[in-house]
Length: 633
Image (cartoon, rainbow, N blue to C red; front, top):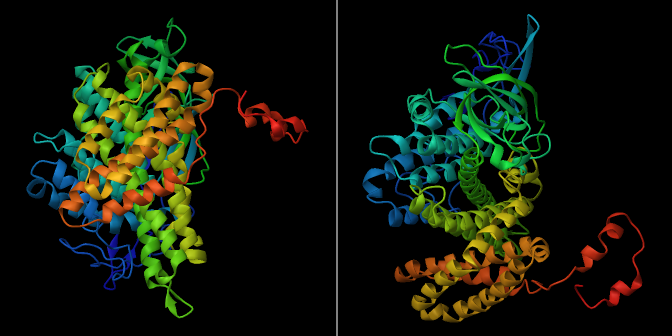
């Protein structure tokens, strides 16, 4: 990309794009240059929308009343909450990492954001097939702007900074991912999987595999490998134990045969895949984990055939496909019964990234809506002066702040146990807070994006603004790496190990011991909700049927309680600085999410909708006696 004298980004249509080539079993390659899909070489290509450079410089904070546009800002310098967190939790942050993150914040708010709109509107990934000697080959084509920006992300260290001689804390690259989520969830998706694969290869891979692939994944020279996690098959993504892909030993490697049904970053240079070795038992204990390179050790193209790209609702900037494995060469990463455990560790890391993406997309939606409303006049007044608009924007920022509190706690929890073994009991809190945060931040992300669009009105419904893309992209956050029901089951398993809510109760006691006097009444209300949650947890853990019936409702309740608890913890820091802003956010969150939601029913027995489910779904008569039924049965 280049900028002209007016600051307008332009793409040169004569540039070629990289093709990521996947071959058939004969390992032959296909051409490696192609013009923009659907255009002639040297064809005119739409320009990238105008940016507004210089809105926010280093050392400044964003005042949404005084800037012309969110695009062109610096997503790091604009975020006082992020800066405060990093100063409090990263050693020598000001000297070591602030400049790096400030530069990154400007990069994502400009180049990445322009690329996101350009790719989504004009040049989404394309798939081409070619037959050669009876063998079929596939190639995924991206536009050059996407490729250049993607390479720059990895060159700036969004993966590699954690694996240098003087490595950065994961909190630093998590902050990068959070800012990336404010610009482009499509680019964040391959980053999430690449960070996850890199982490498990560094921590758990045999030494030869680690030595071979870690430097390629962590490269900061502009040539980094990206990675994928291949688990989902036709029967679904959550029941990994039902994997049908087979692994057959062939000397020093394995040959994989099967179909991976929903492969994001389908053009990755590397992937880890679940498969069942010959003779292994059924279920998750019979699964091995395998490293699948796009090119084999001799440079030949591996037998990976992308037979179709999914036509998706959102995240249209990243290729997601169906991948056929036919004698595909792979190295064993972890044999049964360890393969499933290591894959779950990678998916757990991806769930953390899901939280960060949810945080980021919410903050962007809020900034867009608030900035728009501050500059919009209707009926002779700025619309932020109207009480209903104020109420809408307040509801949005309260949800955003609650999500940030949950996400920051996930970051803290990961840093505390990142070197622990898979079996360590110290990882339980990380798993619990990740499940709660993954669920609740995704829920908030969808609500916040929709509310932001509604607040802005018809303009936001068009592609002239980013909100329509954010609304579509937010949908993936609820299903990525396990939808709410899966997170609820994970929560139940963890609570069963704890025997209840002990870690949350301990946190609440510590809070009440030092809560400011101005918030003591709010804290005491929170304790009452926690007592109710304890009773509900006891019921849920007492019976499998009750567990399946109430798990999701309990997860929603606990996520709100923990978010409120974390917000109250944060108030102490701001009150010490003379500000009650965070205290007001905490109070509003408790009032809106706990005080007003008074129908949290945790009663034993079948509920009304359970008893009448088939009739409700199929328009069948329901006995009138159900109207007077005395509750669950």
